[in-house]
Length: 313
Image 1 (tube, rainbow, N blue to C red):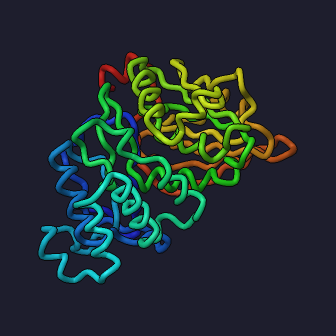
Image 2 (image 1 turned 30 degrees about the vertical axis):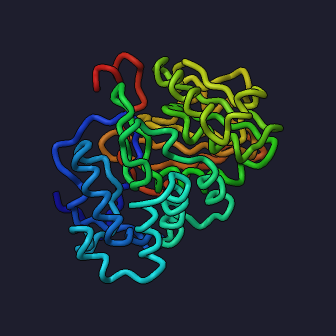
C-alpha cells in the first residue's frame, strides 16, 4: 500500500480485527513534531507485531530503519544503546522507564508530568503474560480488543493533561485492561474521580486485578477510581460532568451524551470516522459552546455494541 509522503496514520485502537497487510513496511511519514524510533526498537516492534498479529501498528517514518536488530546496534550512540539494553535485559521497572525515555528522546513525549505518570504505571501489569509489554505497538488482550500502543497513550495523556489536574473528574470510555484509567487516577489524585467504562465484563474484572497490582491500587481502595460494565457511548452520568473524557474506539460521529457530560472548560479526545478517521479534540468553553479540531489521522475500529465487537464487526 502506497500513501503520499505527508500522510500520517497512528494506530492505537482497542478493538482489533487482524489486517491482511503488515503496515510496518509501508513508506508513510509523520509530521515534523514526530521522530522515528531508534533502529533496533523499530526492528523489535516489527518482529513482535508480525509474530502476534498483522497490522495495527504505529506508522513512524522508517526511512529504511526497520531491519535486523543486531546490525543496526553498531550505529547507536551511548544513550540509544542504554535504552535498547533496558529493553532487552534488566527488571520490569527499568524496561518501563526505557520505554518512556524512548518516547521522550524521539519527540513523541514532551510532558514531564506525563512521563512521570507513565513511569509510575508499569505497562507490564496491563498486558497478557508473555507479550512484549514495552514495544511500541498495540497488544491483543482478548475479546477482539487491544491495549493501545505506548505512543498513543502518551499522545492522549498529553492532550488531556490540563484537564487531569488534582481533584478533577475523568471518564475513560473503553477502559480495556485499565492502563490509561490507572494513569488518569495518578494524575487527578485521591481528591479527584476517575471512571472506567467497558462493555466486556471479563475485561472489567481483569482491569480491576491489573490495577490492584499497580501503583494505582490505592485509588481503587478509596473509591476515587472505579470501573463499570456499560455501553460507553452513553457515558457515565453518575459522576458527570467530567473535566476529561477519553474514548478508545472510533465513532461515526461524536456521541451527544459524551458532549453533554463534559464540564464547561473540559476536553474530550475521541477518534471519529469510518474508513478515514481523525483523532478529534473537543473543547467545551465556559459559555457551553463547543470547538472541535483534528489532532492527527488515526485508524481505530468502530465504537460499537458488545455483540458487534465479539463478532469482530
